[in-house]
Length: 406
Image 1: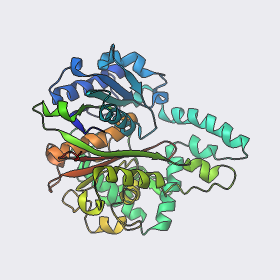
Image 2: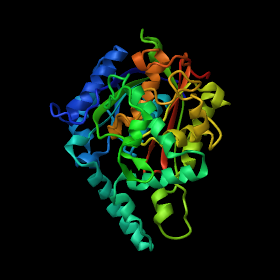
Image 3: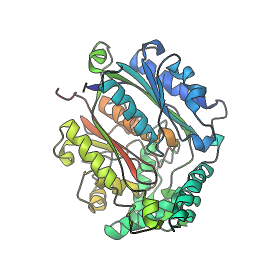
């Protein structure tokens, strides 16, 4: 398997509503940024991988509408959708196309224009099919899905609280840290410089234990990346960031496990698929002790509590210890292992693009090009993460400033 490099990235400004562009035009903005960053043109791209949560905007097969515009005309085009983890899955699809030797240069683009639809309606469309399955087997649980994403994630949050020393105060302080990080990121949706945990704590409780201040916004935005083989990357002047390891795992849907039939009893906070994906990605990268060898983490943090769960499930500490490490400042921009310097998904939530942005942000940090939200330590190796499906799918990517030995 060949080494894979990320040669160009493009992230659009995230806002509530982009009324000046349609969906293909929004994604194209990220594409052009990524091509320019890689110092290549569309003609230099061999294939295209794209993805978003198409049910959220009510448009099936968006790659048939925008693929040619994004550089896929007359070339192979693939669409991948895996929920919140879509961006990670799209990127990993591109990694495989290059690593396998099928293509030398692949463009991947992920996006969401939530202002063109109603995301909860999109979630409910999936719930109808799941509801039929659960009903056939004597299950319930439709109320969880139809109440929106938070209807599931409050169960995940409370389960994690029960098994750790994490409190709502930790959630308040984590949200404040990430929002202040986002205030240093010019592309982030929410800019709340100076916001405090006390101010987060005053926001309304939506469903225990999650407050309004713990949740992600509804964003329009896109991300694109240019992926190349080692030989082709070395012929360009742009310094590559190397994809050293990647993996995705799925398990029983947490919703079905909690509210379905039979003996299934899946804890939504366990996230075994994340632990398996992390272990596989680290092994591919030759990392034996991620706690010592990873310099920075960009997990998928759509709700404040996720920072603690996924820090642990990414094998960066012993389970249950993340709150303690947070308390001592390890996760700060100046900490031992910074987490979410971009502000993460809790500050910018273009769903289809969100997990790819975690990878692109790691690229910026390794290059030293993250601007005001650049961490103080030198970043040689970083881990990015995407969570999706029905709280049962996780994708992990390890990036570095040197390639793997082959």
